[in-house]
Length: 310
Image (tube, rainbow, N blue to C red; front, side):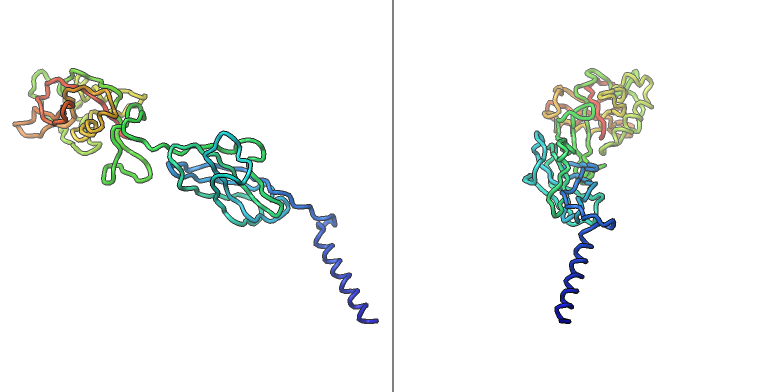
């Protein structure tokens, strides 16, 4: 009789243990797991091809989180309401609730995306769009091209590897005024062509800025010079316009078709020829009929197109 009694006691002990683990500390039954609740907490660091996304699990649904992450799609006309979505990125298992994040790469520049966070437990998937509203819809940054309207004018040049301010992750370049801002303007405002050298000898990218300031400094009536006209331009309410130097001006010539509105005459650059006695009265211009660059006396009249850097 002792052996049946022993098994009966073990059976009772197992029943007690199962009952203990099926109840809360107050003796009530453990809640039945439900799908978790999750929201998008932030969208940050949006670039041309990537975005950093944050999610937050506000309720685990009384069960461990088996997986969490994000669904994203180019379909932005309707809610993301199921896991049958274009793309997914998984974070994996999580301990409890709280925040999680991921960087999504390989996106298409200039494209709108809808995105939903998700969390999964033993009861199923919870989606941030369960609340029947967009959590987030975002667009990646558009890659600029020559001729695009941007920054108060037209994109005239995009920095290439080795150029000043080139950055593989952020586009930089030059913007040209939408149209000519001077059509019969002298390089110098002196009464004769005998203008002293203005120390405007810069020919590298962005050196047109210092050239422009120097020309204005050395001219008796700076408001009439091509440099002053360019500096006074306020396209897009920007105040950092200047007269391009000879190499910057050539970038405009190369992109002239996409930029548009150029004449077929000569455009002043902000570059003097040199500082010698023989040529200090000459500055560089470019003929937009054939692209030829040459020098002319500073009191000659030419077209003016302003530029600014971004």
